[in-house]
Structure formats: C-alpha cells, structure tokens
Length: 362
Image (cartoon, rainbow, N blue to C red):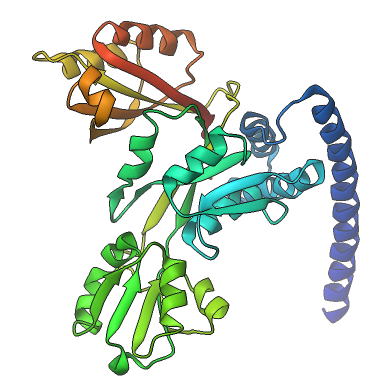
C-alpha cells in the first residue's frame, strides 16, 4: 500500500511539472498578446474575453473538479497573466488593508499599481481622467444596503461599469487591550452598522466613533489607549494590533458587491448584465409603464433602487432617480429597443454599462 501511495505521488509530481510548463508557455503567449495590444492601443483588461475563457473551461470540465473551482483557477491564471502585459493602475477607497483594497486585489492581483483614494468621488475622478486605468467602488452590502455615494456619482460620470466582484465580509475586533479595558471603538459607519448586534451584546459600554475607513480605525486604535477598531483581520498585523474576536459581523452571509469602472465598453458574451439610471415623467403610472416595457421585451430586472436627485439633475429631471440592473447587453436588439421606448417616458435615461456575469455554479 505504501509503495502504491509513493507511486501516485510521483505521478502527481509529474503532472505538476507539466502544469507549470503549460502555464509558463501560456504566459509567454500572453506577453506576445500584450505587445500586440500595445501596438493597437487595445485595453489589457477585457472582461468579456476573460469570461469567454472561463466559460469555455467550464464547458469542457468533465470533473472531478467543480465548475466553480475551475473558474477560480482560470481566473487566477488570467489575473497573473495580465501583469505580464502591463501594470494596471487601479483606484480604490483607501487606505490599504480595507475591504475595497481586498476587492481590487481580487480582480487585478498583485501585479497592479493600487492608488488609494480618500473618497468614492475621487475614484471616479481618477478613472475619468485616465490617472487610473480602472476603479473599484462599493455598490451594496447585504447588511447595510446600498452605497448611495456610488449610485449618485453615476449620474454625472463618463466612466462605465465593466465588471463586478462580490467580497465576503468578515469583521474582527482589533486592539491591544483586553475587551474589559476597551472604552471606544472606531470604524467606518458601514462596518459599525454591520456589527451593531455583537457590539451591543459584548461592548455595550464602549463609545462608537465613525471614521473614514476601517484602515483609519485600525491606525487610530494602534495609538490610543483603551481603544479598538472593527475591520478586516489584515489590519491587525499592519498596525501592531491583535485580533481580539473574529467574525463579529451580525450575519454570517455578509458580503459587499463592488463595481469595476473603466472607460472602454465590453463586448457581448451571451450572459451579461446591464445598468441604467432613469427619471420618469411626473405623471401617474409612469414607473409602472417603464417596467411594463421591460416585461414586454422579456428583460429580467434584477435590481432597482430609488435615489433623490440632486442639483442640476433635480431641476431637469425631478426629485427622484431610479438605478436599475437587468440581464442582457445594451447592444442586444431587444435591450436596445426597450431602452429607446423607455426614453419617451423619461426625462433622463443613461446607460451605465454592460458586463459579463459568469455562471460558475456546479
């Protein structure tokens, strides 16, 4: 039996060598592709092409690996390959070690240059002005809901949504103190909201103070006696703190969805999502009629949010805007026809982009 185990391990070692050789052969081809893209001025990050690669791998998967496992492997290979083409500049809500930073790294890997910003607005500004190639912005959390600053900024931006990523959110209590000695807890407002039940039960005596980010909270907790921070565990090592308690979020399925924004639209993949902002005319049944158009064209609406209009937009388009996501690509005939009909019922219609939605379930 022992000899059989050793033989199997030798076979695995041989396969590992073959895999490494194949990956490096692929990497050399990617470098050639990168040079061709540079000559043509084509973007390095092309979500539609990457979705095509992942989809083809899933379709060819005969097991025993799961489809989601295959998707993760090929996605990681492509992330690493991109860094051989060009070092992309990616703006995120900083500083480092925030969940936004983690989300950006999940999409763009270790080879990108990350530009920390102090606000969501700055992410859009850097992306629009080509200071950053892409930006990563939070859009909604399963516990705290919609990130209004992001949706509001889409009204004026010239950037497009080119992708999305969902990051599981696990919060920890970070401090140098024992829990009994903690008198103040710092964190971003959303993080405090996502952990309020745990804090009420375990640190009800401690003051809660909102700061700009979870990373800023950890930095402050590192310098103040009797303080703690709520945020990702990565913030502990970076600031000389320890993880006092892990997974203190109120819901185990807590996650945040982020949009990737860029300047170049995606091609169709056959499985896409799109988003738009619209403002209906001020009359009874106007929103009902817009939704009826989507239904008539068999377009599946998957998300709709109401936002108060602001400034010039409020003067031109009324008091409220609607942010909607639906299945389909804006270039598909049925989608294009529906959007054109909707324009006749609205004072504002703005397409925000289409992006691939990968099917990775088993």
